[in-house]
Image 1 (cartoon, rainbow, N blue to C red):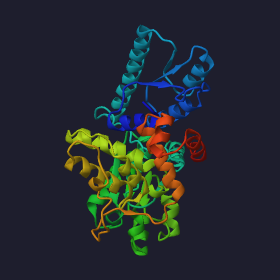
Image 2: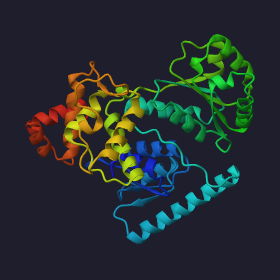
Image 3: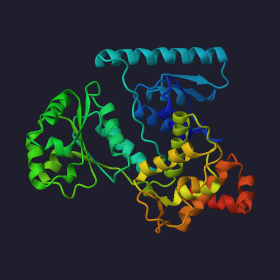
Length: 383
């Protein structure tokens, strides 16, 4: 299973133990790919029980992986009995960690960590910022368009924080700013030992912002969300945004749209019990080049609708509400006029390689190119 598929699978059903090969690409032996995956797995879930797999000559790399947070390692070629024993030990280690966390939380097993999917550099920057700021007590302002994953990022910050055992209380800023709203006051008090997730702070006028600022305890950890910080009073912005994290819109996330669409299809398949045979090549290209209304959330809704209404075959453009004449219906996705030809070419090549199991000869035939021409384009696009 490739990393992107694995991250999606972990979001659908978190694993008790993870076997991680330190090299994914044929011919590579330095372990850089595996170390990057290990850092992301532990960044998403610090309690992840990871057993790394490496070549017989890679003892130095295996030891470095354990220093980086892996539970254990197995050398190739392994004996099945040895592999099973290492996995059983990792499972026991994971269970002990969860029992300790549950005792601290006093209300059963802890929730599984939120995962921010995406292989783009923009999302890696977001994950890196979360890893750095979450363990501190600093308040965080998460900025970005609606539907881009602001609430998911906020929950990820809480989950990785020192106060993760406390409550994560979500509250609309309009209620929090009303001094007569006693329910909101109680919610703020409940968040004292955890995190207050404050939504839509930029929708308040200046008077309401002042009232909100006066109502927030100085020692309360707050993660706030907003479309933009431009309309916020400097004092409120300083209180809520010790660190600001900008969630990139889907249009700025490269090939993440197709990765997310596949994840949403697997999620809908599981939720509704309907089989899915992936997407047609035309649909894959359309997904990548479309500017989705309501951003990631809009893509998720389109894919789920296609699965629910589908007949079990591959999902096509029309199933996603694409490939039809323009409509004035709110919420319909429209193609971004600014999309470059270079982006389209990269998406087509990536789709062809994926479709043919990364067999370059077959992908080249599919695209009408020679092997040499396809290799040049793959190098050009970093594929």
